[in-house]
Image (cartoon, rainbow, N blue to C red; front, side, top):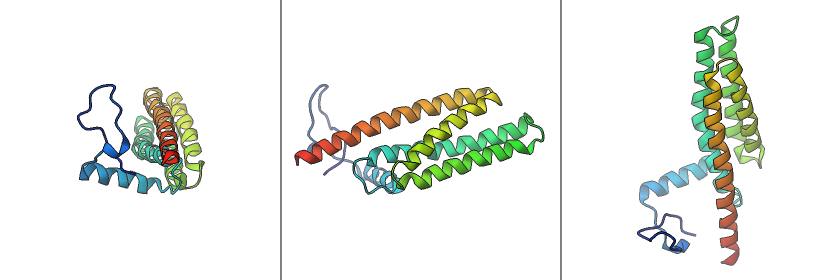
Length: 158
């Protein structure tokens, strides 16, 4: 199966998968995302790759939330902010690590998003950041699932 994007096709034109062509850099990025997601199961391959990407970026954000909690002195003692940020980072890393095991990583991702939004009770700006990442997560879950379903249907016809 070849991967890629449509060339110069017009709007509304149907492009068959064999007409797709990826550049070498796009090919490398695609292969890296799939390798990181670690799945051998073609039915959830894209969804897990997208989930890994979102959680990877989110890891940076949860560490920054912990540093913000510490820096603002929102909690007493102050180091609790670092503990919360570290705990969220560990949950994120666990989600990335378990992405290779069925739906475990995706379920951990859902839990992480609930926890991330909950940090908004400590730092109100975290509601906004949590909402953005949760929206991105939902979008990637829906689109990834649809792409995997379409791939499975296409493979069934081959």
